[in-house]
Length: 165
Image 1: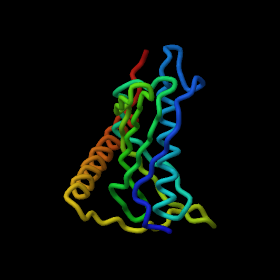
Image 2: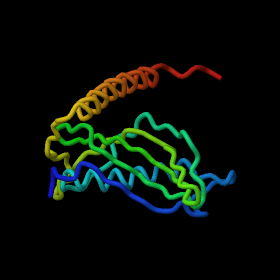
Image 3: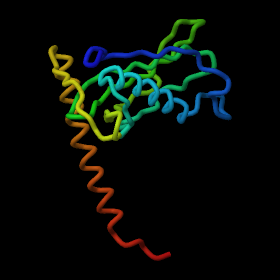
Image 4: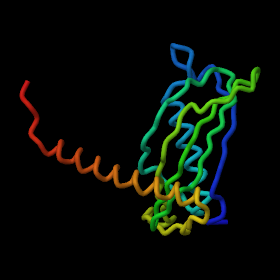
């Protein structure tokens, strides 16, 4: 039911096929997991098909190793007319020692699309109720401002003629 599922967790084991030549999980694999969990969270909130619009502030803090229990946590922190922002944490836990660590974190934005045309469609509004909710909503707003400033800077850079050589 749309507007009800604010949080979502995926859990699975990191497998040998997920790692790079250094024996650690590929950053691209972690990004795939984030996108999959974010998609499920966005569809769960909106009740519509959703597409990824942006991933911001991604930080790879700790490696994920083969056999780690991986938890991808998504929490809705802002809604626009048709967009949703989720805070995502990727937690890796060594099953032998029970030591858990934050491996990656980021903010991911999705837009809900309607079925017939694939055009943006409204999503249920999320209203912060607790102090923590308000803190997260303020964080999302600040990140959106920074993202817009970065987009403007990239546009200015692309508009400049390329240097010879």
